[in-house]
Length: 197
Image (cartoon, rainbow, N blue to C red):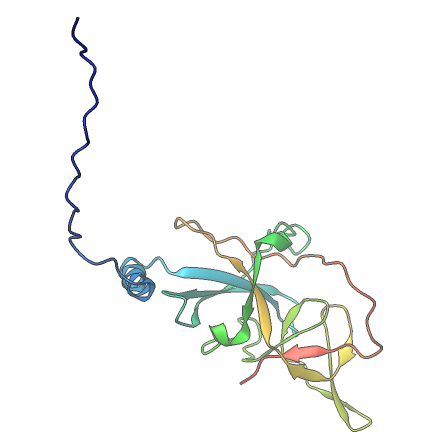
């Protein structure tokens, strides 16, 4: 009887020469940025604001083609009356991303309600346009979070900001909700933050 099963040495396969060298991460990012610009599908996020004059809520959408670029204003929309603050408390804290403030260009940012071109973020998390003037108290200039928590305090430089991912797929972006966050015991003087110029 013959042994039909035999072991043979596997012939070594010749190494396949790469058609092109693998692109670096920077080259990949550059090509993705070109693709995003060509298709209009930018990386986008939304930040919710409140007009200090009219108490109307509005959202600003920012977009960028690559992580090496800054987010630029792509749309400013007033919230509809159906998207009231209490009805739109749907954005979860996990959907928010924290960015360095330098990642954003606020050129073109304007409050659509009163036309003001500057904003303040309170310790309560609400971001108001800076329509209200600062109040002089004992040589200190104080800003009051209105509408909002009513806290009053000196302005300091803002270093980071939270933004939610904007809706994808061509659907109309949903308004960013003001999320209720647990608070820690605060100091006597609340700190209000303004963006740096």
